[in-house]
Image 1 (spheres, one colour):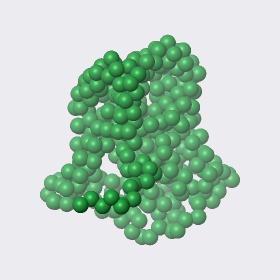
Image 2 (cartoon, helix red, strand yellow; image 1 turned 180 degrees about the vertical axis):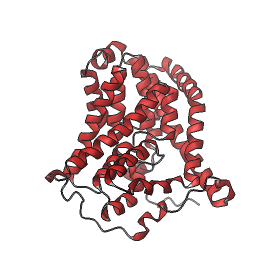
Image 3 (spheres, helix red, strand yellow; image 1 turned 60 degrees about the vertical axis):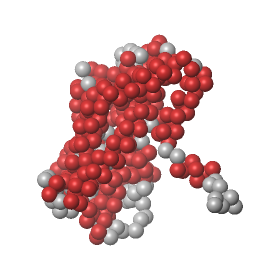
Image 4 (spheres, helix red, strand yellow; image 1 turned 135 degrees about the horizontal axis):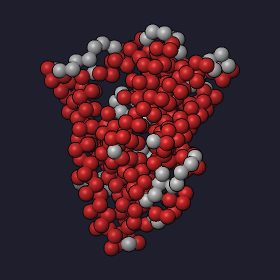
Length: 341
């Protein structure tokens, strides 16, 4: 018999349990159903068609990510922080720009590295590059915006890492980067244990790695799937109700103005890296300059909440401000260079 005396869940508890991506999708579709019922079916049709078009890229990206995680390839990250400082900066930027894990996933390792004396310049290079690109993001971007755009964004990720890394090195003797770390408990020796050892490329020889592959596949399938649904629903609504001339007037045309707007808007407004790709595709079709799209995605990727929190958690506000400054500068440069070509 049901116990009617139990206290019903409080609203804040229910809010925490709700999936924000699905909630956004539901609210948008509900609004369309109420305000413009005739457009509800076309919105569903557009979303399903877009998902079908993106499915091969999504599937390949999910399989690649699951393989990397099951094989333990993240153990190679420790190699990025060995050797001379210049070498570390360069390797950290490259690894950050192509690796399947972001700064927020390796906070214990980063904290331990800083605590034992790894230069902030190398860590900054990794921090700036890592949120911008990974195998999954590359194939999703290539499927929506073209292979050239995906390659350019990868180059921009590495470039912004180098910009930040060498920027910190050049200013390392200034008050800005003096004593950069917040007071925190020194990580134990096990903080980096998960990133030691050698990868096992033939992961299917071990049951535990097979289970890790399955778990990663399902997790990323659900994660990417829900965010791509959000993105395509929003893209459909945007194409239906946002006049093309508005986007063209604000973020279209040549010159630095749309690129600056893209960077300044992208930094605080970024929803999700994967969701941003279809939205940028839709806005470009409406007249947004491609340089502005590039600056939007670069600035937003570095300043998105997970990546920014990872930096804020470990360094003092002035270093965090430098991180955001490098992000905006790199975003504008990436937009300018892309628009030039």
